[in-house]
Length: 290
Image (tube, rainbow, N blue to C red; front, top):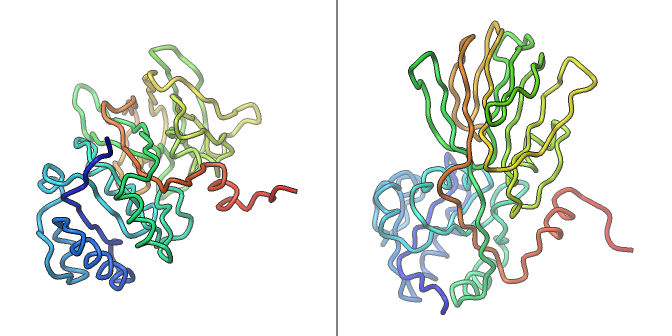
């Protein structure tokens, strides 16, 4: 039996009004179908769309059956983290650049969404990272990440030195610009730029990719997603931990960054014809079939 999406949240791209026209058209389309529409205070303030129930994301997450995000992958990452504790599926309408996560085209938005709301979609669960920064006996920062957690040098631009443990087993010490710990979703983001492998989104694995390591033998590795990663900061003039590139925590020598698989997953809904390899070929400009 198909999922009934009666209550729907509409969330627009942050810090811009570039999707106002599309958001207005989508709201009218959904109202005509009889859906009850919600939005966040930020979207309501930016886009001034009438007829939507305005509530903070944490509150509306308990009332909606679906969230439609008009924006790019950055907006999708932010919403996914905010909804991490709630089983609300996401549909992304791409108004960004790459669109790995937001894969509904703005040009075909209404007919595509009509099909998806009728049950013609592909559902995909994506794993997330749960992370914290320990300083002595205290936890100074705790959050989740959908793409990646990055431990890296700060404003001084000097190499940092750190040790990596997996499941309490020593792996290596490293002098580098930093280290990316990525989910399969994040394997096509910063980790890819650091030379890491592309992981299919359904794999139960994480990627560890050093950033400009000061040795030719350092290589990215993939590990089981049930493993716990520990990064100990040994030396740094200035260092930070970044979460999906949207939040950060300053680090001190002796800090431990602990990364594990989050309890909940993010459910993405794709158009029925969705093919991940088509997405890779299009976004990464791979050669077409001969």
